Image (cartoon, rainbow, N blue to C red; front, side, top):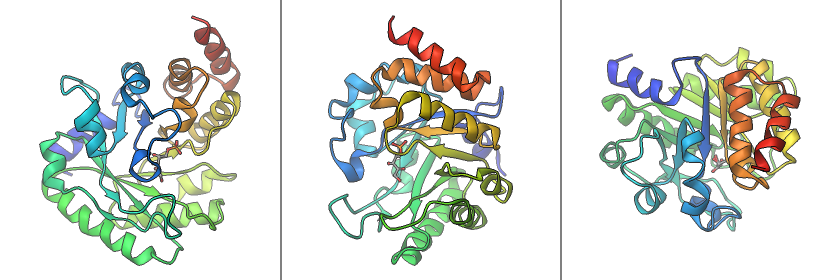
Length: 261
Ligand code: 5RP
């Protein structure tokens, strides 16, 4: 692995403990003004100091993020369909790697739809972009997206994650499921979990903790942070689980304490 690739990976995964709290705020690329992100800067600016990495789109970055920021950026480069479309997540490349480099990103993200009708398109698009990334030392985060009708279990997540890694992903973002150890054990690259739909804060913290216990290196969490009753308290509680080995109970107590401040 070349120096540039390693250096960019060290911006995403913190060398002090090999873990990361990525804040996912890329939802607008297929969901439009999602609850919580309708006024992007009001929500995201107070969260940035607590995020190891910000995952978002080119448009959000250019329009709403201060270029003086020192938060590392992971840029979503796949897209093309909305939640209104039956073929949601049948995605192609929506941003060139040259533009990603111009935006000084630390990594890019791409969704693959394993097991669905358009699996082949999303997977071949993914490997094509990895070839472009390799040329410049840009890490690729594979998002193992789950279509509306697909089962989420350890067998499926392990298959999708292993495929992503074998095809060249540097990090895999997947969903937490029972038996998550199987997903981590069979995947040769670091795994972060997506948050998924909003759950009560205590449950989201339990999930993050269980994922770390199973071997994930962190989270790439969106709605469970920005749709929380107190997003700034929630991201700090997630940090406590990921970086400070808090139990879910300790992290939830921290959340309750911080939300009143
Ligand atoms: C879709 C995505 C989302 O855009 C997002 O990053 C998911 O975050 P969360 O589920 O935590 O809200 O990756 O596949």
